[in-house]
Image (cartoon, rainbow, N blue to C red; front, side, top):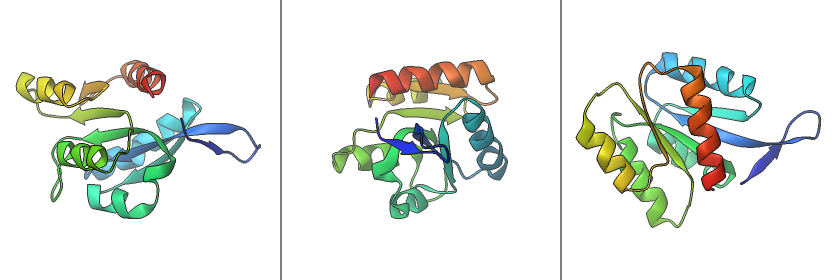
Length: 131
């Protein structure tokens, strides 16, 4: 785990959200912070890769379908670079093949939008334990 210090000097894991949907980028970081974690949001895989946040990220919450590099493509790129970041995929596509493929490629979680706060927190806890 790669914790960050918050304003009080406590170390909190950074969860990065990568989703092209602005409403997700605006809402999820606030919820993640309510859970007690640090959070950053990115509108694309390319923005995340160029941000410098890769090395700080303890868990990646990643949309499946995005313009440019898709979520699974970003996941593969991180693995190619030797970055062992636990990934929770989120998607609005109810397709069991996509879900199965995500887990085959090493995802630790998969949530169908809209998902509950409890489901997200459970997936985050599982991801952080896997890291």
